[in-house]
Amino acid sequence: MDRLEPAEGIYVPSVQEMIVLACREYGIDPDIPLAIARLETGNFTSDAFRRCNNVGGMSIDEVPITYANLEDGVDAFIENLAENYFGKGIDDVEKISEKYCPINAEAWKEAVRALMREGTA
Image 1: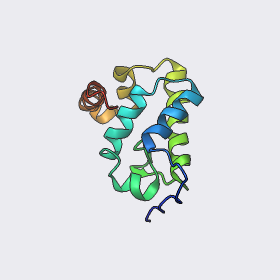
Image 2: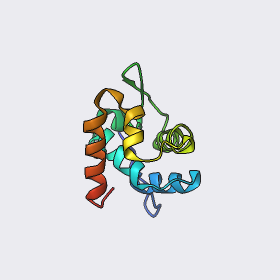
Image 3: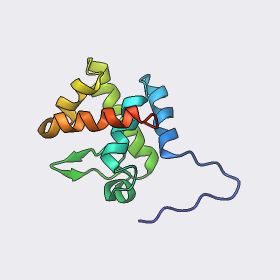
Image 4: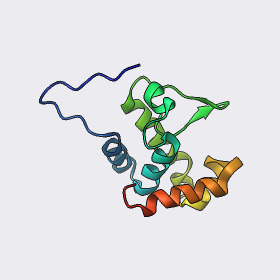
């Protein structure tokens, strides 16, 4: 599915801005979610991101979840983190990695930390 170009004169926020705004809405710091999104989408280039509006690598039985639009994908990703992680005290990369990516937790958390250190997460 190809994305439509925004109409002239209409501001369309970047996916990173959308994530930051959603984090504010849910009351969580955006640093970790931004880094997770960058990792899980290959810097917003993966098929799951482009075709499924999936910004967090969320899946069911290893099949990426498809969202109707990017806003829904961002909201589902941040709501998941806010309610099932941060809201339950799972609020640092170490703890999150054990639940978010248990099969490859060590490498996953190091990759997220590296993206956070880049300062662009």
